[in-house]
Length: 402
Image 1 (tube, one colour):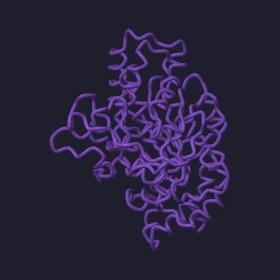
Image 2 (tube, rainbow, N blue to C red):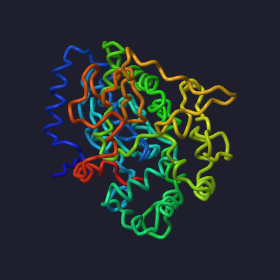
Image 3 (tube, one colour):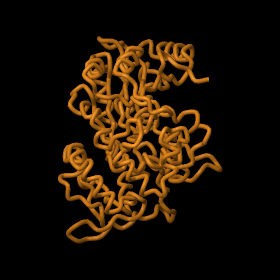
Image 4 (cartoon, rainbow, N blue to C red):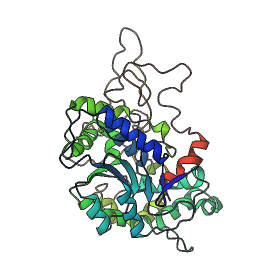
């Protein structure tokens, strides 16, 4: 039976959450309480931008501090099955239900009243977003294939092909009483989070291409509010090993730049007309002259990633070898096999990158030195196979996927 608190879905019975928090409190009884009490860890996300990935990372703090071990509740501005838009008062009521040491998740608009609450010492807030071109592609797959209860599912199924559905995902719908504007207008209510110094903004792509540095930023954001006596490396290891994409009911590929596989010239034109300025504002393009064709260098913000750590778009992100860098040269030679043995496979999951604590080719989230169990799917495979019952039971956590 689905449990609700003040009309909002919670992920476990209240008694279980209470007992679990008490257990965590006892476990860390010797850990000093911060001056302003333990904050609420709040992961705010634009839909289809890594909601579950951020949830898993924030839950990793439960291994080093007395935070809850599961997400307390989830809030979405739109109800997934009906498309009903919740009122500003409902968002504030939900925020007021949260207590210190809770971990919560939300598709939450940056309305002034919500910003005032979230940017108080009561919260340690994070906001994750993704290239909107990848968002519209992910939205089509989610609504069409993964969530039959979604308010737009039957309409998407009625369209002749993927290209027609992608047009709708970019431009929205005006032929229905259900609010579904174009992608730029859907993102607009979230833009206010980018201007709040109390909110750590996270590009989904940074968690794929420079995960170590991004996890460090996530850790430091909490440490400024709640200093921990645990070593920094232990905290980072806890955040890293908490990531397990196969436990996400809406995980499909976890890759970046996949829009290039699906955008036709017409889609590019429509997107530039509807949301060209949004890409520039979010730092994904310098101007409106992008095309996404050929071997384009992935644009990286200088403050985030170095060019040496950036990946080439296209084949490299899809698992193939990178093309030669501009100016000549060729791809680096493969590393020599150790003592005649082939190098270990790299794990799949969020972008297919090996992490500092996954060396040796284990599955995502597996502890260091623990080999995959016999019969387990090979590293790099199986990420798209998600139990359908889990989808049916948990996909509502995404709310409406727009």
